[in-house]
Image (cartoon, rainbow, N blue to C red; front, side, top):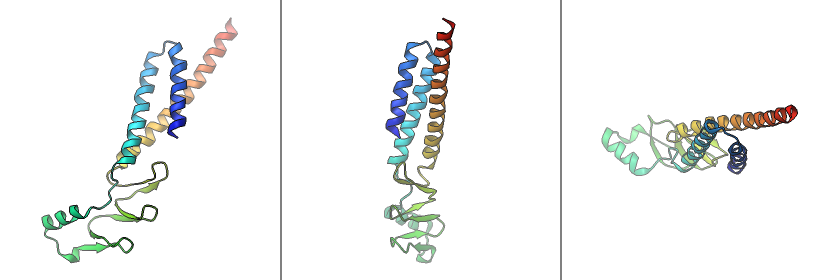
Length: 149
């Protein structure tokens, strides 16, 4: 996915560099780097996998007893009952506020990376629409200018 969009980005920029579409070039570059950075952030950040130190600090801060905790039947970790945690069968871990397991990033989308995932998906959609419109306009513009001559 990244290689094909990068290839399209390079092709579009090379065709636009021949003409004077400075604003479109800037929009392409900004959208492309938004797409790449949001993808990398989504793929590299912890989606909400529980860490034992965090839960022990939470236990001490809230003065909770053992009855306020639940145990995951698959990975055998203790989680506070007031946290929405789901076990992912693909990753074999529990994830806080899991939305889904994303095949593009090979990672769960949870509490800490869902915003960057939405930015990633929306910037990819805008980027692909911009590539389609630019290619169509480029073909139409050059086809129309050749017919005039």
